[in-house]
Image (cartoon, rainbow, N blue to C red; front, side):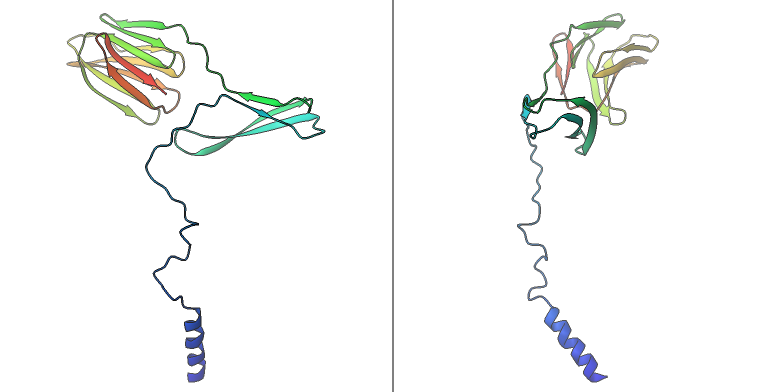
Length: 197
């Protein structure tokens, strides 16, 4: 019995690492992460040369990273004839600036939408602003003595709607959007500007 225990001890010593505090995974293999934001260039276009003899384009898989950081996949079914001599072109073009749309839900306050930015034209003081994550909403509270019923207006994308409601000493403007966006808030002489990216 002692011989068996001695043999097991010897085998255990042979398997032991010289430095038990050294990580088993080398540092070259470990990913390095930090909190520095990465700035990506806007995608313009890319040409893709097809292999010789390609006759029918069945589908295209697109992998993209969404606003939460998760990588997702979208498959687009095409199933059409192609000429492999000609390259495929994938392009991303911004829409021309859309015409601004003006909403006047209450007297003395107007909402002007131009593309992905919005201006709240008001002389009332902005008290606070914050956002909610699900669904993504940006909320602004303005000081006021106005009394009115809650109003809702439908807006063009990326906005879904704007809701304005009276809360006694202030009124609240809520913008609901179709996804999570980064945004910048600026106060101007006309009111408040929100720009979404």
